[in-house]
Length: 263
Image (cartoon, rainbow, N blue to C red):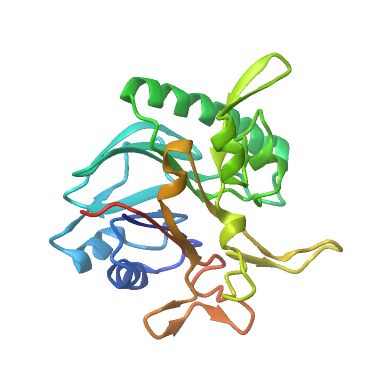
């Protein structure tokens, strides 16, 4: 199963988004900050195989385009996220698309406030839908080592499979927290130039490349992640200008990841 997330930065990326879906044979494509892109026109370029799911208006930051053979329904919407139920021929998934408050204009405390409510909603969805194949993807506005991702009372996302294999739930201050697995560190590489999705050079301790656009999964999916990459081109068009993402296209590079499942 091929999945794509892209923060479009409110620019007109109608044709580019369709072209990337075709090029990568994407099954589910999710976008944030899509206000400058007519997604109905994107779907027209993808007809007759794809359909647009914008939800019911509870979240205006996220939209999803998927192959029609995948049954998509919205479990819950909030300002910063949408929780989808996705049924394929082989499996049922909970796919959560997020666009958390901006960094640095909002701080970790604001993002954590959203995350804690979201995690509660995810646990409710997992119980209601009797599904543990949960995938969270989107613009986290935090990096894999940041407290928003690793905090036990936030996403509780560990960076190594051995940890979640050994123990899926941990207890802290008398409360039990279920873990996610974050594969991003495994796929960041100088050799492949898979540095990150967002470039920021200001500040004395800047990392320059930040992995704000991520995917994290529950234990049931850790061995089904086949690859995670940031796309630098769509066909022959570069998405970067010199070093940084081309802001006229988007200040974020698209995130593409594959799970082992055949349709």
